[in-house]
Length: 336
Image (cartoon, rainbow, N blue to C red; front, side, top):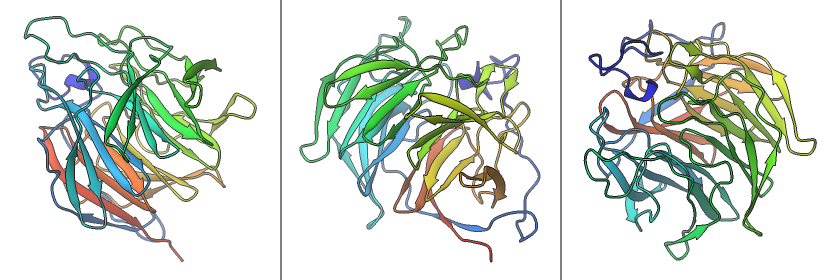
């Protein structure tokens, strides 16, 4: 299974190995430069398969697993990051099921998160289910409120983003990776209602990269089985409820990558290819439907990390292999 990658005694066939691709040196001919800067380490335990998102000018990291393999050490802690001070503050613990692969979005200054794989205080040896619970977080009060369960049912590794005050969530898989969900749903925070919209037509169903830019959603790459890593890429228009095929991702097909959006550009990097843990990053130009490779990350390549953007700066940290705690920022720079 993908998420157990690099535990070689347990994995027979996956998209993942722990070797690195050749270094990439950007120049005006072959890539877009930018600056990676290492920040202070994440203040909580090292972890994998956590969820990172933003509300206003702050970043947040939720839950995940403090063990990288089968020996699950699920956690439900919740942390706030202030980029102005490079400091982490622990906030109220997540009251839902402690889980990995939780996902969600922010709407009108509040966070909305749910789904994932895990169970609060699970007894070792018990079956740990997937979840459909869904919660609202208010940073003004540091309070969690239970909301309507995700209408698509229990699953993990969904995609999620916000467009014009509406949340969107879907795709994902069961823990055995036997079911590849393609259904897609929108969430109205005012009415606490889920409505099914047009299914995702792309190849991948888990570990898919997704973000929203300019009133449209974008999704692509990901896996459909442990042997297949997709490269197709799609745009979702909520006004017409239609998906449109866009230019394929130009890097190696991958799952469990990092992603964030800055201005009219989406960024996808790291992740698990069929034969490596990727260290490269790519920028997608939504105006011109074009991909370009950017600087390779100077630290350890990884997958199952957290990633988000605040005020036109990208942030990446934690993840596999191991249970990493380092945290980095990416400052884009245009080429003349």
